[in-house]
Image (cartoon, rainbow, N blue to C red):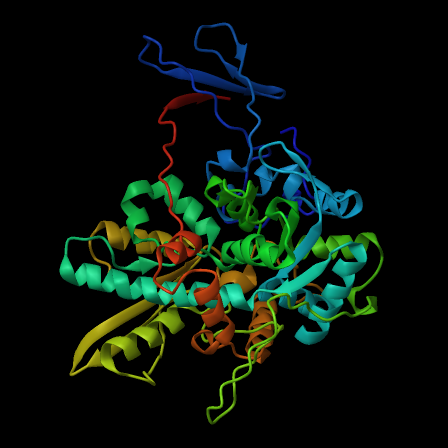
Length: 493
């Protein structure tokens, strides 16, 4: 490939389930000949050759972009070998320096405002790496990013809460649809916040699996809409002049940000312009020989107006204002837990439903059920890692899936163990590091999406109501089956 990669994306650093090839190329289609043997390809030291006609003919390599990714072999979980220059740390530093960027359409734009949105998982990864508390890590990240040139650094609690609320409503809609038409492929609803899983589903199982996948956007993309629409309006800026960076736990978020579905034609820009990961930010710090602990601290920004006052209800009020938050359930956002508890209350009046998971094949494949009158009325699952995802898909194809909802994540142990999180050091095992991250996640203040008063304001002032057409269009998306070339090749070495 001609693209320049981030320093973190070297093949020696990869730890995917399937070893990736040394280069990622988009195959060139060879027209079928009259022979019955098919095309014959020879792989030489300096390229690929078609030898079907007796005379070797070099096959042309095709430069690819993120949109061309075929989700093949080792690219399934992290797509490291197709990351383009504009998704690299070098590009981020260039934008900080020059205050210009070139968008996916090739248009170069001046930057009026650089906004960085921090998700909790990579922030905790750096906290573990530098032996800092989550609060210290957050404030030092803000200080570091502002020293580079960021204008605003935000947490993503608002977007995470919106994603949870929309997923809850979507589940109830799907449940009613399934009850009205048992032949509808509305359930099980499968989580869509993991782009590695979505990419695999689109390009491997296509139209069979897509009807089951939640249409609710991930927190990253909802945050993009908030920044490019609400923040741009509040600051009276052209959205295309806002350069929006997200801090994420995996490389697949770069793929997600680059999807054409997330290019807003009316605003002439993507929701997210650049994704930077924990391991890349660690390398940026190392390049400056400056540990995160030595960076000056600064507070998170809050550009959404005055934080709402807590309700005068008894008991502790959920935290308002800026800050990293955790959600009930897994470190991937806790979708299964929160939708389960919401459905139990809405459907059966269970305001404190028991939620106990049992492991199935392994700790990354588990389920929880709700019974009433001796009958099972809800069954939810969590499937992390492609081994478990493949088992889940096979159950669906055989018509044997018992679930109403499944939280699906490509990485074993979920987002806290994302492919771009910092690596274990000092002899620590990967399992021990994940356990530390889970402990750090559980120490964060607990978010309560249903009590987030800012969301009520956003639904009213920005989205024209909770169930409006604008809310559906802004907070939901569609997925598309991708046809792969079905060409059988005889390989000669």
